[in-house]
Length: 299
Image (tube, rainbow, N blue to C red; front, side, top):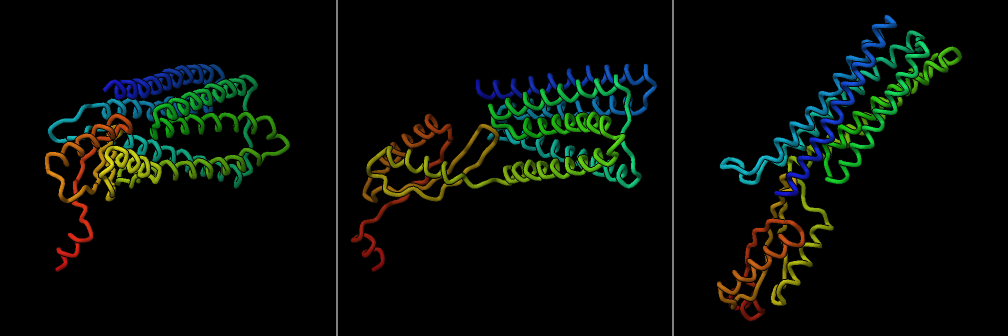
């Protein structure tokens, strides 16, 4: 439970820091845009404010995923976080498609970008702030292994790249009008590649992935060390609900072992898996027949 609260706090911190910085950037761009009479800067200001939507989704998804188990959801609500990652990934795909359309339009119509010196400095500041947000979100995402924070981080980075491209395009557009459009196409393709990875991982998680080979080996080694009479571990099935992980596994014990003794071993296995691997286990016991018993059964 403490870890769930820490995880929820991490999501809230990332979300609210992003919302605050995006809101401040929105106000700065809006004021500058109105003072300069620049429709482009005003439009970008509203785009920056709309970026807060993904951060709001982060806050909501982390709040929902931290809700405890109830009568209808016995394993908690941890998968809400993955649902949030899918939604953010979809929004990021829309951003990439808009990048592609705008870049194609500029190339087809031979359009460069022109901004005042003050506006260029504003976009430079925006690029640094958004990249800082991206790095912060990536760092937190790695700390708690969160797909939704990684998705939000890529959204921040896409905005940083967009602002950097505006600066670069404005600086070289007099000689190379096509630079902004070409780089925009490359960035849109890269973002779509990232989106595909985010969606693939999140959807696969929601559908229910098999445990990794590494985790399977860890489980087998941990179980077999519990009691020397255990001679087989198989049929491992993992069910993940955020940080709550359920695993079912079949183990074999000597057929002549008494039920209460076998039950005691199963209870020990569950305790060890909970303490060492943070897995809630359900152990299915099977008899391990000797060669003589197998022959008698066949007869």
